[in-house]
Image (cartoon, rainbow, N blue to C red; front, top):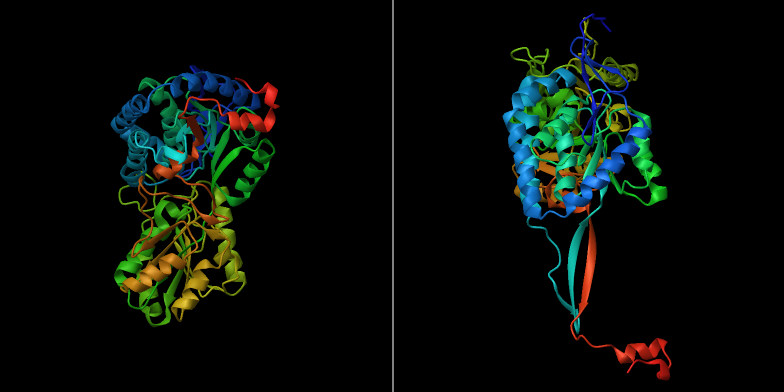
Length: 499
């Protein structure tokens, strides 16, 4: 790391009305390896204090009507939209992603997430009220969980913060969010902006830190739910810590998304779709294309065109004009990504482009294509989380389905074909939470996002996410207004039965 004598901006935790500045951890710009800010470091005691203020804020917030809560959420959305340039600049410096991605993708999604949940909370779904037992009316209520703990990843900090905060507070909860230790800045600024926009202080609390803070969130008895996004391994730890308290948990975990190209597909469209799907955000995306399977007759034409497109990708700094992908989040992550590529080379697997750590500062890594890797190899089975994609061939539909499903993960995947019947069959057969047809990567607020198998449980986005942050209550009302004498007889002697 390059040392600097420039005084760095210090970012505090946000706990109720307090901006807590205790502790200090450097925040590194991954494009040059230099510290550009510091952030407070929280403890279990900070989590406990956040719970106290969150409980107080949540009780009053839950008493507001859904319309009142929605109106305040819309004010936050508008405020975030107005300050998108500032947030995008900070996001790109903190993560290394191109400014065009932060400004054109992540910030608009975050704004839309708040707007969506401000509206959908006003039309919650459930069984119609009615007489399901003669003489009684039943109806459902959706009650807030109370205090929600959120643990967010480093690849999409502002977007993931919105995905967790918006449905939780729309449903009447308060939130204690722990951003990733190396990308906390836009989450802190969002919490400060929320108070300015009219969200009551204490409703959104940001406690920064590492393992101690995360485990305190998972084990605190007054945090009723934990929403986690990150690796499968860490998700398993979150679930294990929450289990003794029978705490509600949602987990959006790893992925190993396949992109399947049939010979009747538009090969140019498939190659361009694979390019975006594999390398957006430098491949640091749980839905990113990581395995490409191409039907044998189309394999060579696809690989030739895809390779040509990949070789045109411009790797650069976030604010450099023309940058398509930036650095990885850290040199440690780059080393992890490169270890998979080197393991493939040592096993005799062919790397046709990329695959070498470049000279110079920053955590840059070139777009890399691996071909004909065995299905059992680590690069085909494990989440690499970088700009590395494997390309293999297949013969028929049955083989393609088998290969697509043959990993422990099941978050997303895509099929490329001009045959609508095949598209329908294949999308039904794929074991994953999102299937694209002749496309790969876009998500929308109105549709759920979540996985099968070791990719997690629960949903982000859509009204299904709103339901994750509520508890269903059945209310049953007697319509007669009379004592049920025949029921009393079951438990009372005749002389004890009320007249």
